[in-house]
Image (tube, rainbow, N blue to C red):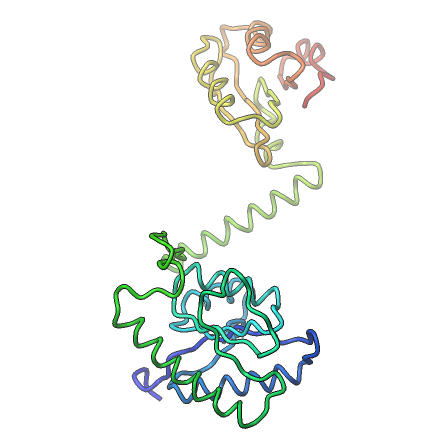
Length: 294
């Protein structure tokens, strides 16, 4: 089959496990009914959780909810996962057909959208009629979505909204490898921190002064750094994020300036109780050893 002859995918969102009085066999039969109607409409039915590749299922579901040109969503029994996935699809404002069995009540938030009903007991005659209606609805909805620039499934009926989108970016093989290495490095750093010896500690042992600011607002951090950068006795002043929103100030002392003087200047800025310094000056190290940090 060529790409031209290949059918477009119609995503399917529905329960698959036992819920209420409906077991897995029931949902398997419903899936077959939906697949027949979708095939009759000229599409290929596919559960949004399915994919040819191996990957994270949540990412796959969201990607299919965004990419599939049309989606049929069965809200029978009001399965929480189904309702969540329906909400995502409606946020993308892409063609969506909602169906339910005749024993499931309407939900307030989606009641304004037309629902196609089928019998929960799957009576043959009514199922045949339902499949015909669903096939016609799929064809008509997809055609309108591709020919009418003002088409909307849900959002635009209530005003102007910015439709959610998934950003995509093509990268070269080299860029992909570098990004994976960065991810691996971040994971290793987290493991190091949990073992009590972080990358931060390894890289900053040679700093003359190391000030723990704890969890601080970023604007306060910038103010401390900008003040210390202009200090005549300091060099290589910087800010290090040890963990999420946990910051340290690090600096080296110039040769013609004493560590004690730098210590006094910094204490006046951030407060002595917040400081834990390292220095190569043994007398000062003894003086500062044991200072509590927060």
